[in-house]
Amino acid sequence: MFVGLAALLHVYIFWMESVGWTRPEVWKRFGVADQAAADVTRSMAYNQGFYNLFLGLGAGLGLVLWWTGHDTAGRTLVLFCTASMVLAASVLVTTGRSYLRAALTQGTLPLIGFVLTLLS
Image (cartoon, rainbow, N blue to C red; front, side, top):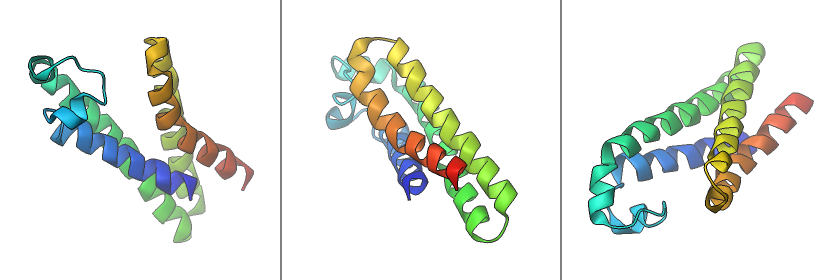
């Protein structure tokens, strides 16, 4: 369940960064100062969004594989993707204290999913 929620969250982050970035309600959530700054950082956000999409899709595919009897492949993919999500959230914290909330939002579900997958 937590892995699935983490996957959905990362697909949503993809949408915000790669599709909705230039909308004020989106760039304001990321602390961007104004529309001009959002326009300048659009290509960076577009690229970053795809990283989140790939992690979300990978975690989702891992769940599907695991639930359809491909235990080793599925669990491995789930563990890799959730670990990558947690590590990315950890890196986000290193960019400044103002990113702590975002890092917790981005990293809590995959951390719980990672731990529960290890224990299962």
